[in-house]
Every structure is written in C-alpha cells, then in structure tokens.
Image (tube, rainbow over the protein chains, first blue to last red):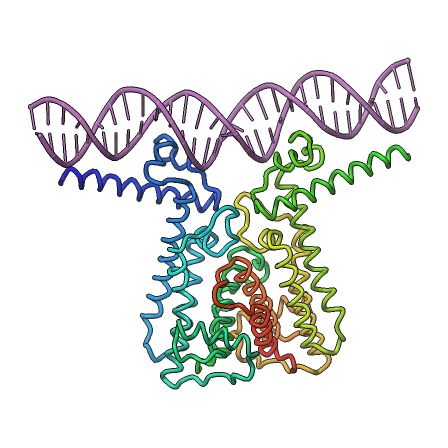
Length: 230
Length: 230
DNA sequence: ACCTGTCAAGAGCACTGCTCTCGAATTGGA
DNA sequence: TCCAATTCGAGAGCAGTGCTCTTGACAGGT
C-alpha cells in the first residue's frame, strides 16, 4: 500500500510538473504549445509525456479547466469579501477580480475566451466552471432584487421572443428574476469580457494611460444600467 | 509592355487564387492554416507559394488586412444607407452589419478579434482599417450631438484622469465630443464586440433560440446608454 | 539568336504530434 | 523471498509542417 501510494505520488508530482512547464510555455507560445518542448524542459523523451496525458489536446483541456476554476475562484472570493448588502461594491469587486486575474494570466485568459482552437471541442466538464464568473455577477443582481435595493426595468422594452427565452434561462438559473433584468445583467458580463479582451489583446493600448480608472468607469456604467444603487 | 503586363496579370491572378484558397482553408483550419495544403489544392509545389508571399505570416497579414477592409466597408455601407437624421436606425444598421459580416465570415472574424497569434505582430497598416468600425459608431454619436438630438451625460461621472485621457482621444478623433459621451460610445463598441464574440465562439448557444432579437435588444440598451433618441 | 529575369519543382533541414516496441524498473501476491 | 504483472522511459519511426536552396525550364526584351 505504501509502495503503491509512492508510485501514485510520484505520478501526481510528474503530472503537476508537466502542467507547470506547459503553463509556462503557454505564456510564450500560446495555444500552439509543443509537447516536445515541454518534454525537453523536463529532460525526458517526448513519448514519455503520453504516459500522463493521452494527447496534446487533453493536456490543453486540463489547463483550460483549471484556469476556469481559478478565475471562478478569484471572482467569487472577491465577491465574498464584500459586505453582502453593498451591491455596487460587490459588482466592482467581482469585475475587478476578473480583470486582475486576466492581466496576471493573459495566456490562460486567451485560452478561455480567445478564438477557439479549430479542431478542438470543449468537453462538457468545462461548461459548469465556465458559467461560474457570469453567474456570480447575476447573483449580485439577484440579491439586489431580493433586498429591494433594485427595481427591475420595464418588461415592455423586451420583444416577446427574447422575453420568453430569457424567462426560460432565468427559471433554471435564478428563479424569479425578471427577463429584462437578466438581459441587463448579461450585458454587464458581455461588457466585462469585451473590456478585458480589448485591453489584453491590445487593440486599445495607445492613448489610454489610466486603464484602471477607465475600466472602473465602464464597469460603473454597467452597474447603473443594471440598476445597482450608488 | 503588353507582355510585361501579361506577366503581371498572371501574377495577380495567381495571388488572388492563393488568397481565395487560403480563405477557404481558414474556415476549417483557423489561424494555423497550412501553406502546403494550399499549394496542394492549387496543384503546385509548396515552395512555389513563396514566389508570391514571403512567408505564411505575410499571407495571413494580407488576409487580415482585407478582412478589416471588408468589415469596415460593410459597417459603413449599412450606415450610409440610412437617413442621416435617423440616428438610432443608423446605430442599429451599423451594429447589425458587423454581426452579419461576422456570422458570414466567422473564421476571418476570429482572425481579427480572437486571441492574437503568439509569434505574430500586427503591422502598422492594420491599425487604420481596424479603427473604421468603431469610428463609424462614434461618428453616429458625434452626428447626434451636432444635430442636438443628444444631450451629453454629466462630466462629473468621469474620474479626472480618464476624463483627460478621453479628451485627448476625442481631440484627435472627433473634436468637440465630451469625454463622458465618448466613453459611452466606446462602451457600445465594446458591447458589440462582446456580443458577436460570445455568439460566434459559442459560449451561449444553448437556450437562446431568438438570437437576432436578443442581439437587437442588447444593442438597443447601448443605444439608450449613449443617449440616442427613440 | 542571345541574355536576363521569372517561375515551378525538388531535395533537404529542423520541427511538430503521435505510435509502437523494447528493455528497465517497480509493484503486489505467492 | 522470489516471480509475474504492471508501469514507465527511451528510442525509432511515420506523416505532417514552414522554410531555404539549387536546378532547370520558360518567356521577355534587345
């Protein structure tokens, strides 16, 4: 038993080491990291890696999954650290945490939210972790509604078809949330993603030195749109 | 001279053919298209392609540049087709045109707005075409301000540093535009990019059958945020 | 008719993901 | 304790990639 767990422990350490080196390569090579290069860095034959990961895509998938979890943890932790009743500050904390994580791990963010790798199809295990960051934001809105701090926008603004669609989503995600409010919450998430992507993928770099302040302001705009009290 | 132009014409046709085949491969292979595969499709040796494009990245750059131009043309044409005074309809037309182009050319959209290719650096020629779609949207806002149909948001909402940054941008882009209004126009562009990316990169597919209506509503929200009259 | 510039093709280099085989090491049970 | 079974690393090899260089054929202008 001890022997078995020894082997298992060595194996687990090996897997961790491979993932660590792969993550490091990710920052320079992006999505097209080289198994052989990782193997070289580890001083082993490239074929040995296949003892631990059945394919390169599989290694990428585990990195993606762990990245989703890390991002979700960061956003939720930031939200949890704020007074539950201070909805606006919770909104800011969650958004800022997502941006901070993305700036600290740009390659992994690109893996999660960049263009999908052509041949690659995300397995089902990734959809639940992928939902956590947006669900955290939606949860803030839901709490605001429950606490009466937030009045839902008029449903008349919504065309009937999209109202029905969103009502279905709300029923499974956040029961009782009005469709029009859910739409605005999703707009906030979309905006957050767009802001981070633009900043990270560098289509905005020039002429906007105070990026933190700009980010905060744009996030504040969406907080207003959602209806979070100032 | 006739002979020379004949040679030039044949060469131009060859370049067009290579680009056409490469574009076709782009839809299936994404950013990592294979020069050799393109050459195979054209019935020529892979080395022959290098007579027309110095490198694979160079071919990609050409495709990217032409894609930017195509997208910019589509957005501007849609805007131009609407009565200049109907600002809200112009906003909708521009945004819908961008989405329609992206849905019709998903691979090229991913090339433009997806995660950047690791080793690849966008040349300066691309920054001007890349600015056209957002500038079109900002132009609509500018026209609305000039026509008095639109009252700028209070500048007090903007922190001083970002107000200065945006004022600099406004000065070179759209003189006279208040910083707070520019911020909201940029929010609209960010939202448009986020909406299209989410729809295209498939993180939303399930449970939202009426995508056109959803898109229209989210765009309408941003039109309201900018202050375009209904 | 003779250069000259252009072009396609082939061989070759270094790299990639991946498979298979073959010894060596480790493990669990008799 | 010893043996069979399992696990593991290394190497060779296949098919594919971008790219370079050389070679030979062709067309253009003089």
